Image 1 (cartoon, rainbow, N blue to C red):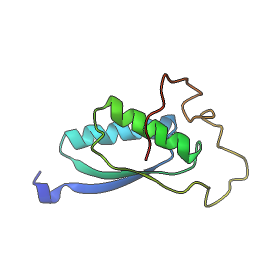
Image 2 (cartoon, rainbow, N blue to C red; image 1 turned 30 degrees about the vertical axis):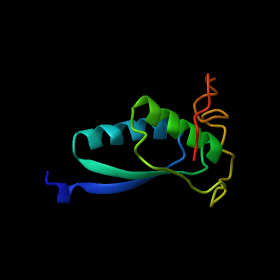
Image 3 (cartoon, rainbow, N blue to C red; image 1 turned 135 degrees about the vertical axis):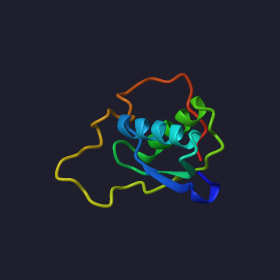
Length: 106
């Protein structure tokens, strides 16, 4: 695929387990030359925006892709659901895993 044909994307996520997997798939697609991830925007959803930032930065560190810019998105839901879904993936969006260190987030 010619460079001019590659889709350029900005990804908006609320990284819990599901979006983490989606980002892994997108990173693989980028490695295969299918698209170019221009940036990742972290928004509140499955957990707080602060936790989403940590989850995304951890993923990018593991994948050695800290070259992708990460931005803080909305910190509150735009449309409130009938029931709270913020604890669906645990407090941190990853089933309340403990981590040795917190990554440095933008």
